[in-house]
Image (tube, rainbow, N blue to C red):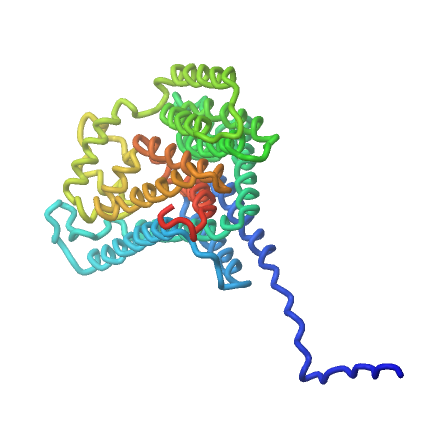
Length: 434
């Protein structure tokens, strides 16, 4: 006697089939390459140092962040160091908005409240619209950094983004070598490579960070990178052609530290290192006198320090340096020259934002450097990206003492991406501040 056939269960009792997961991986890759495009395309309009470019990249980054948060609101936790760096950046952007808002109110209703000769109370910006735009620029950069952190939690995507950024910087190096300057430069700088940037020093910072990333992929990475050697050589050649003394020196220090970091999977051949060092010394000696205004550098620093002392806690407003420095400009600085930058990012921060708020970016850099150093000394995956981020911070910290390259948004995007790729690989469950 045959067994009775099983009757199908009623439709109400059937287990519903599992829903097809949303293509979160595809969306993450799309967002990752959008951020890579921002890093590589932002230098094109004068190094991204234009208000129109700030608004454009802010819109692109905001759309990418919204797109990334559509598939799933649940995200792996970030280490505390990443949150601390993000918070410092957000507070600094908020302070710029505060300066702009208070400055606009004061310029409308008040007169003669300050003892420093500006006619404005402490805390007001001398250029409220410029400070408001600076706040927008910084807010976009903070959002960029946070989104890059989230994307870097996917190891495969982080490595792909790092390779794409490196190849893009190598392409910028090739264009800087091949293309002539697109705008007139002072006679002493006419032969210097500057690519799409307004000056050779800003290009040197951009190329230097690409050099650090390439050396890390070549020496510290566990996988062989066949194009890394050619890219490093190309970037190094373009870096020498910028003639930026501080940029070349800072890049060599940072790249050397990355190449000699413990735990390297490979070593650069000593003949190549010797050749690179000789070429760098020759370039520095050849370009010893081409940087315009270097004879006035120390006088400029001393007079900026006087401006900082007049408003040590609140500053004069972000992006207001030409206005704040004019009352303090004195011989030996020429009277017919308008100084638009302090030629030191540290002094610019303290003059424009004060010693307290102006030190927030420095604090963020120190927190990130400590976390990246701990991860670089470990044997965990993502170590090569952590070393690259740490090397980029070293380069930025050194070059910022005598230059304003980090005040150019394209350089800030590249620095933020390298730091985020390194920090995003740190397992949050195993590290509190690392």
